[in-house]
Length: 352
Ligand SMILES: [Zn+2]
Image (cartoon, rainbow, N blue to C red; front, top):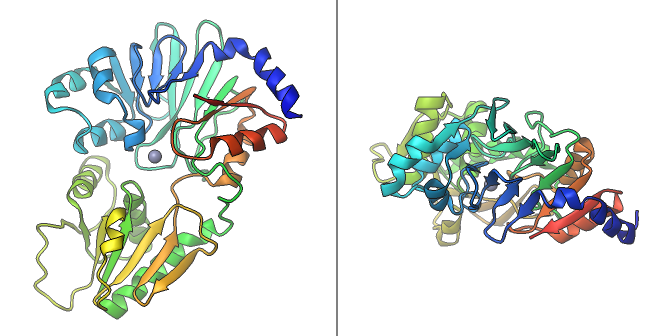
């Protein structure tokens, strides 16, 4: 299909476009009742996951909306990570409506279901069946395409993220990364006793799980917020993070002990290259190789918690929507993804 006929297809789907909007506030609005990942004047606000660009306007939503819907983990993380204003906490507790994956909730005839997105703990996709007009709407949120991801099949409209929506972001080696990471950590522990891992929130939890699943049992030293999130996930949801400490509380009495220190990604540039630790910087951005050695004590490893370009296209093919709306609000490559989808014969547009 050429882009000319694609433009015509948008015209054919104008009824859908009256019921799906991505606002400049970042909210994805489905019908009259539902706003997702941003504020709009609707009775329901859904949060797909606890990353800041999906929690925008949460406090306004707590004031305005009747229900704040998310998975139990996401609702708890939003609170533990301080995204809810202190004085709004009582309202939040009253209005929050936890939904497990596959559980449904109806608001004025519209039916909401959350599905696994395999992005960070608690993350979900959103499936909505509108009552009037009778159409099915899907939003992927941020996702990674794995065996745990549930593809929204045959919706009328699919709203999709575009973080790595350009052909330059393909990672053919992505499946081998967890093992490479484990090997580097073990090598670092043997050589230096200390390994420093620099990553964003969400990816840290993924690395913690990868290491524990691989049998690495050395203690984790965590920044305050990550510690609080980890404690919640372990105590309430049964995650296995083994032994971990808060960074300000950890005292090392034994010089021979080996441990793994997690630090925010932005601190990587001030790492100390003094031969007393191995530094591993995790990046989601494109690297030609799965990992690169940047100096004697530092590796950069390409670990992403988003679908790469190939998987974004694959998702849309598996989903087979009538119309695709690419999220152009959040950072990413919306236009290149739209173009690629049109070339594959899909009807696609970017919003806002
Ligand atoms: Zn995210």
